[in-house]
Length: 123
Ligand code: 5GP
Ligand code: ZN
Image 1 (cartoon, rainbow, N blue to C red):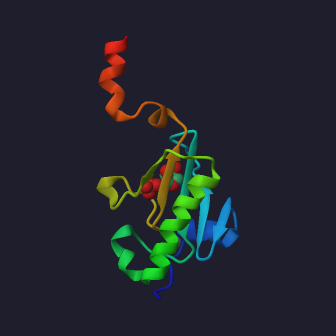
Image 2 (image 1 turned 60 degrees about the vertical axis):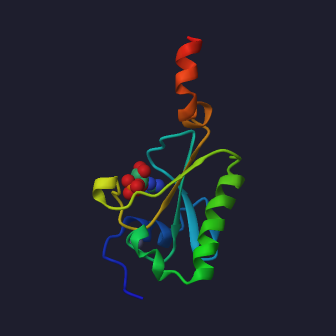
Image 3 (image 1 turned 90 degrees about the vertical axis):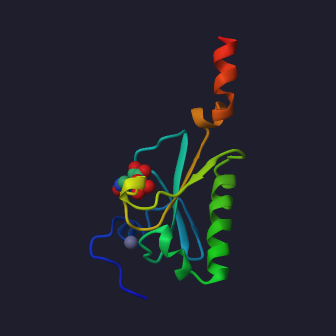
């Protein structure tokens, strides 16, 4: 496994242990700048740059990662939520350590995109 780049923010967070939930090989942290009532980030403890490199995970570990995302949302009290991964700078990735955004409980949950037209009619 290649060593993590010097100064990776999320590697530091993992090292410091400042997470809200931990599983085998994965942690969940609170996003410092939440975009919903609940905004968590799930990241692998080991450094992987982006989702493009998902093939680096053995199948069992990849499955565990997805289950950890779902379990994190459930334990945060969410039934409906969004899971998002930004891949590359022009898609909005700013931290180059793979992470899954788990967003719920905010306006996006209360007003799904499909209801926008209905809401206008009701006004
Ligand atoms: P990206 O833009 O790469 O998809 O997501 C990076 C996320 O990391 C952003 O939502 C940003 O708010 C969050 N973030 C940036 N710096 C920190 C930090 O120091 N601590 C935590 N907990 N989150 C951070
Ligand atoms: Zn890292």
